[in-house]
Length: 199
Image 1: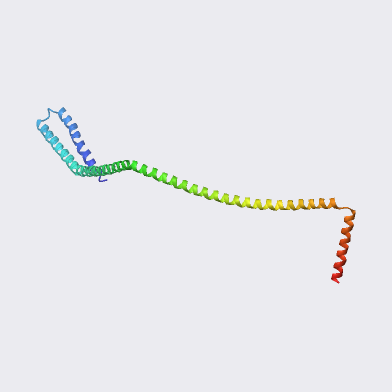
Image 2: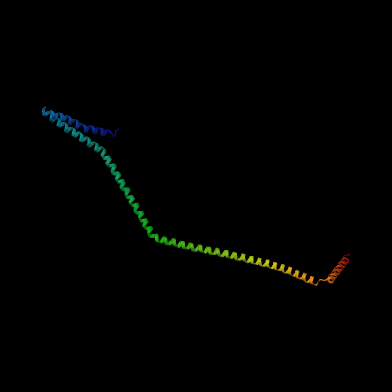
């Protein structure tokens, strides 16, 4: 409500001269009435003007000062903030310039690091490959030795079978009825002698 009070006063003071002018228009119509009265109206208009000017001056002095002070403070605050923003922008620009200046050295460092990692990885793979090859060679040698043993055993078995077959063929070739009788007699003799030894 206090905010509207000065405006109501201002409107009332602004309307007073208009009312006075309307009354003055009536006075002009009755101009012939009296010159003394016309002088009174002129004085009244000047008094109204002075009251209006004083009221406006009072309102402006009361309200304009704080408004202008607040506006000045806001402008100063905005100027300080803009100065801070300008400084931050300059610092960021300087940081970007420093980074750009160091960009080539950083790229070279990254390339060197990538090259070193690549060489280390190659070395790891070559070692791993050598270890795998050594394992495969050991395993192959073990398989070769096992296969050689198996082949020798198979060869011995086969040789034994062949020898038995050959011996059997030779024995059959030499076997005739007289040889068979001699063998049976010899076997029976061996049985008799072994039974007499046992008793």
